[in-house]
Length: 351
Image (tube, rainbow, N blue to C red; front, side, top):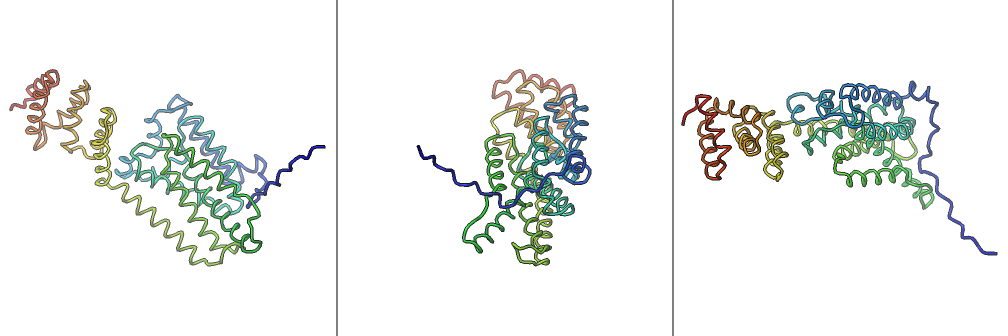
């Protein structure tokens, strides 16, 4: 007979999984289920509006509340929360809601309904706030809140493991939440379209909320210190508000957009950044002049007409247009120069 090597027994999770409720109980009686229903309602509405289930248009997502730095800087602060119920297509929706179904109740069962909802909302806002500070693109998705759930799970696993090491000299279970976190972070860094800043913001918010929860509740893994827990939660809120203020500052956003435009080698991307600057500050002469130059070089006469009409009414507009005409002449761009000179005369602007 041959000896068969026996595999070592697999360690159970550090935090045993709770039994999932029946669907009728889950979707009616838990916040995890209600949030999935809410996500579903918005997915149907957005799909009908966009007439597209696979990939709804950016315009439709913005209409229903996608994160957008320019609109947030103009006072639409609710866009720091509304993206958590929106998804960019059926695959995005299915993956996030499957994750919420699998993970949500496990965390809600531990924290309780009230703390779970606090976690979900604050992590969602925290992720969007960090995303708004670091990304200039529109964003949607519940993943910032989901990473908040992972943050709590990872923090609680760490406390349990530390207690087991102290009592038994070894860790008695496997770190399921840490494994999920590492895998999802790796996926995020491999796919350019994924907003890692939102994930990290939600994760950090979740860790802090996990810290606060363990201090205001009597547990066997952390010292009961309600004041410390409250201070931790309030500090998190204050940090989120501060970062939100910086990220929504028109001055800061304008500088970020100029930096992105100046360092972009793609005319389409450069024009997109300049358009955002114009939306933010309609009287920005430099942005309008540069967008006019790009529009004439690449034949976008509709935008060129809009910018020229505005520039001729501005204090330094005539001098700026004269310099642009000289630049086109020096470059030998006769087509752009001819259009610009003709339209200046038609608008009654003579040099």
